[in-house]
Length: 104
Image 1 (spheres, rainbow, N blue to C red):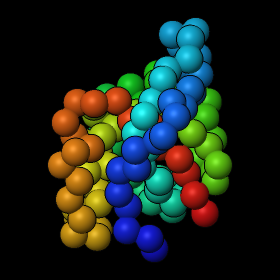
Image 2 (tube, rainbow, N blue to C red):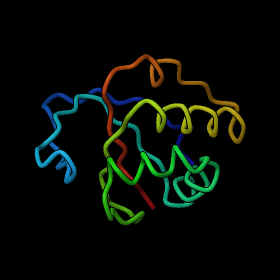
Image 3 (cartoon, rainbow, N blue to C red):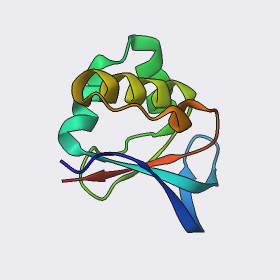
Image 4 (cartoon, one colour):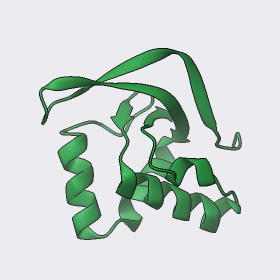
């Protein structure tokens, strides 16, 4: 596994937000494997999972999928990486927008 890190984009990335009916603009990304994403989703409580679905309506958890980030999702990713890999990414939970790219 490549050590997860926040990647700063050189150009904005736009991801559709079906609930808001608009595109969201992101300059920060984190890449997570399909396996890690499934584990993160399994670790979320019901409220956080519902909010994940609100931000990522019917998005598949497969390589190449781009997901809208939000605070609760950032905290779930942060906890998972800290517990499973002893990695801390404090910049992930600083309230700035980000998106997730799922890898193999």
